[in-house]
Length: 359
Length: 64
Image (cartoon, rainbow over all chains, first blue to last red; front, side, top):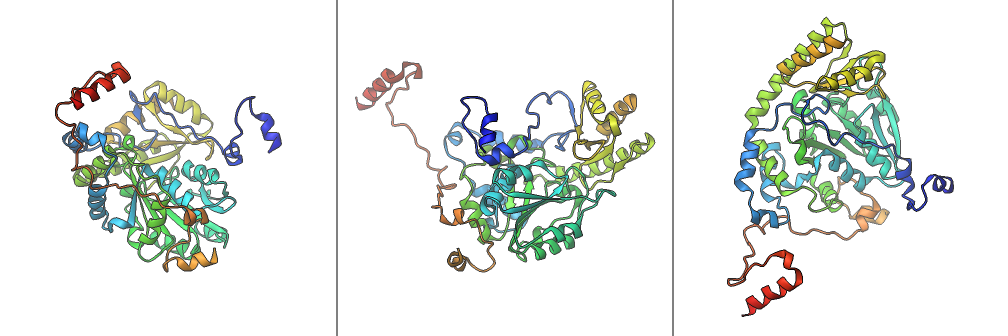
């Protein structure tokens, strides 16, 4: 610690050791709006128009003066997800779900297991809490879910296991039966199954909620629902756990417009089903295009595909950006790989045209 | 910690000691929107730019 102090510029207050140690995570917060955005796995055609309509109908000056109210949103979302209102929290996106879970169950030096590669915020919040993060790598072959390796890594010291199903950025998923084996093995740990991309895979463990007191499931409105700007999601568990999660959560972290938007979003399931069908067709089209270009890729259960660009991963990302198409470089964690979000078939055709031109 | 474990209902995952210890803070998150606070009649809104002086004048208007 004294040595680290020397690295700080004069006059900078010493932060916690955990903050000094953690790797920074800085996704872009500007410069994306006028491009074809295939870099963040958002809905590429936007939220249901009914969401904006609903907000316009309900938004007025009086509403803005009142601290957010969640009664109606919780009732409607509970019905939609087929749970009770006290079986979940509204969260500020999945990020807050991870944060609240970690804040509730993980202490300094506790062991947290994450997979590698995985969504960066698992490690982010675990490191921020001062946890000892243990990584279990995806299998090199096809980036398959490393079930046996994960089961072996879980010990009596494990306090949390943070998993996305399907996983980002690999796109690969695991079965409900595999999750049950993890829940049984890690009975004293909080097991988070992040189902941000559930709508594309159709695999959920939400119905297992009453069977496993160590199960936590998160969902988001940032992906298929096209509401990433709103920052809203849900964290589900048995109501005894939800009481403690609620205790550890900031009381008004979800703003009133986001709560309104979520209500409207779950009323328009038709547009979501239509979009999912379109994405699944577009994903097949992308596979065919990549095969034509002889570009290896990993089959995905989500609305994104990881492709192997080899040593040209970063130049290809940059050249596509110059052409108005954003994709995400993942070569820092999977050699030579670039991740592309799957949107509509027209968008995939545009992506393939640009890719072919520079390949 | 062992004693605290006994207080938890069966099937509830043990939270951090800090979470068990902390006082709950649960302000209302429902039931207030249908009770709008309306300004009393007769109050003249004054430009904020008038600052404290404007506020004092607004109070004077109400008292009158």
